[in-house]
Length: 75
Ligand SMILES: [Zn+2]
Image (cartoon, rainbow, N blue to C red):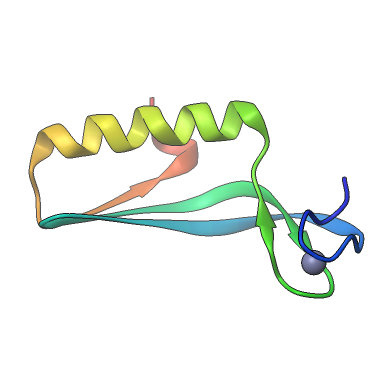
C-alpha cells in the first residue's frame, strides 16, 4: 500500500486513534494501520475503519469524559 499524501511506501504498524467529540474523548489503542515511512501519514484499511466506528459508537453510549479502549479487546 502506498501513502495517499506523498506516495512513499507504507509499513504495517499499530497506532492510537484519538476521536474528540463534544464533551468526550475516545482513545483507541493498538489500532492496526499502515504508516508512511516518509511523512508518518497513517492509513487504515476499510475493515479497521468499520471496527473503529463500532468502538466509537459503543464508547459514546458510556458518556464518559475520556474512554480508553484497546482495539484488540473491543467487541
Ligand atoms: Zn507519506
